[in-house]
Image (tube, rainbow over all chains, first blue to last red; front, top):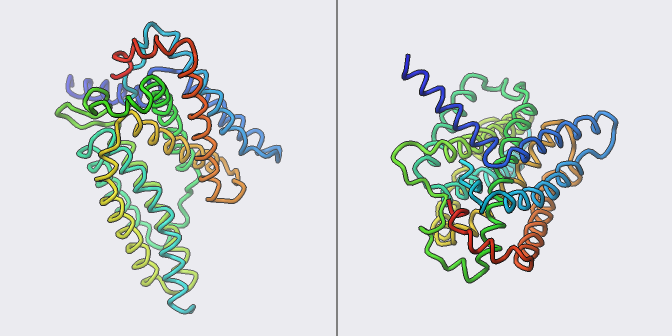
Length: 79
Length: 248
């Protein structure tokens, strides 16, 4: 039982590090971008522009954010 | 029944494009995180792929690939963006001189005994998604032309040839400094992630697969601009001073 529990905790930790990593705003922004892409696509707009724009903005914001965190202590390995 | 040569060429070239994407991810992740877990992930990906192909056979084209593209693309995009940011920060802090630093000082390389699940998952997903796309190509080209056998042989040959080229290139990739490699792999994962996730939502890219090159160029330019901004900004000293924190 304990083994299963620790395996589940480990499994959850792997996915948390993979998706959230050290900056939760990246995952949130990607989710927002994909939702916006889906909505624009339904309205026949050129939805392919959304994700490249999200990437450009999120990369800059994430770099700034990592600089604000105390001495990059939060910039640990993503996985 | 179509002539055999067009089927062979079409299946080989179309499969090669997908195989290049697969091998790029596996080589990039392997060189950055370590080969053991990466190759394990690739092997398990191939096993799952073989099972899927064996079970579905010609009905393979009925599997909806769009949701798979969306999920795998979104995950690669999220992970790739994090690596891209770290790569930009590290290269900005160290510059070209910093790229000569001993690789062991700044590594994402997995040094523990167990499986590196990050490398495993990245490699597994790359192999499974691209392998499925190769299988779709082979089935659709082969079945349409009534030449399934030659199409399968052509698809397998494309995987072997591109895989062999990747194996040779991996030796050179291993010599690239880790911080720069992380930047490059981050760029590639972000590019493929953007492309697949958007396609998975049913959106068509202008130019089809060629859009991958456009995305790569755009993200490369973005990374270069960010590196230039970071190197010129007042944070340079702070970045360099705090590099030990970034390294892990």
